[in-house]
Length: 370
Image (tube, rainbow, N blue to C red; front, side):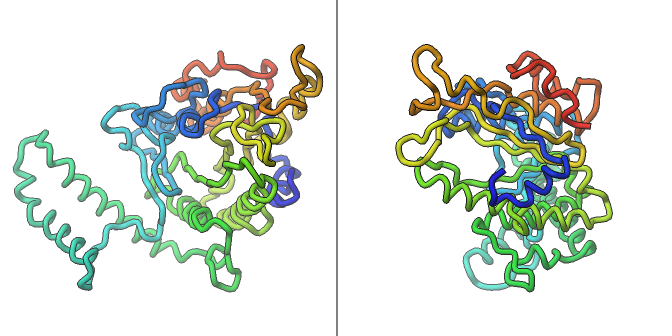
């Protein structure tokens, strides 16, 4: 564990971290295809399309209509998309700023944004009686229903935040504790994560997605990766602060969470010419949580990487991958069943055919989650 990751080391020593060596979430080396594969939970896909369901979307559908996948980053991803084409975001919520999620009500000012906001509110309110009288299936009802639902949800979330209190000082920048990460986006996502744990009843949150960019490290990998790891896993940094505060929430959210970390594709064994290892296949996935049986799963440094395979020695050849030996389909299936236990039916619904996907050693992941 890198010395920039003090919180991760602390959790590992407390037996709450599982490191899955030689995992593979995409058999493809392209960023766009591999991001889709990781989010869809289908490592072998080779067709790039936005019109596809994700493993998070399938999980919340399996749990039930009141469950949602909540995205805390800059956009909703394939991960949260459901199985119904044309209505894939039915159980997805984009919570880029949980303290400013409602549509504005009383807006003053003469700027273009303020004027348009007032005009839209008046338009929807003025046409509401007319729309109500239209037959079921009238195409424009979708827009008016979305406006009404969004206002209702946003007002409920704002009221919840008002009643349940301000963000803790430890998650505010510029205060006494000065929460200040290199990534402003991840800093905000940590605040959002706290609020998700504060208001699971309003959000219906059963899957939560966070993101951290900046891993396209063809060069200067050590510096850039260290900076990123420090933000996410460092002592008194992102998740350390967020989870410390979440642990103080009375609903026991801390112990009801399992975190899963992966990337789009994996890494190469040897620097690819300019001190980077981007565009590989195998990767090390990480899971963290109270119910995680900590430890290392798989062979961290497979001996075959250091000996000739008949043509070359992988550790001596540019372009050689970490070999992907365990499909992350097994990890997604285990987490899905943990989130909604159903005798294996949940796992199969979310990750169909996962039992037949590759694994380094049969039964290796048994008991991964309590």
